[in-house]
Amino acid sequence: MLRRPLPIRASLLLAALVFATPAWSADPVHKENVELTAGKNTHSVKGKIKGYATAEYTLTGKAGQTLSVKLKTKLSSNYFNIRQQGQDEALFIGSTSGNSFQAKLPADGAYTVQVYLMRNAARRNAVASYSLEMGLRD
Image (cartoon, rainbow, N blue to C red; front, side, top):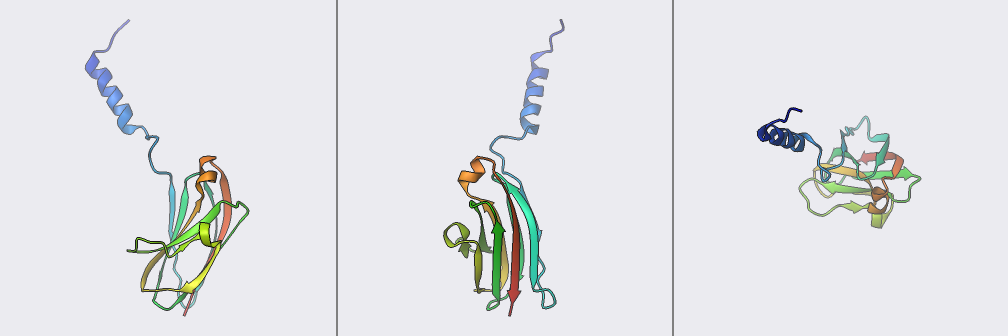
């Protein structure tokens, strides 16, 4: 039986560690830019998330415009948050406020609607099908 020298074994081990996906790596994030204009002020999307995966829909709005977001899902642990670019605190937290949002935007800029599963469902690797409707009007 041929034995490989230790340096080659160590190199193979190192290569395996470098190219393997670590258990602590981030779960997939679906990202999509949403274009809402005067001619098209609503956008609907159907999607599916599983476990710790999320979906992020980013749109651009102006201060004073009204943003509305409604999530339809059959899984009670499926929610969405809204974040304003450059802000630490979320503008809306679905797990405490429900699955619909409507308010005037506080500033010009990008806003991200993040669809996710609560930890209890994500840990079980649950799957949620959803439809999300986003609207922006003056």
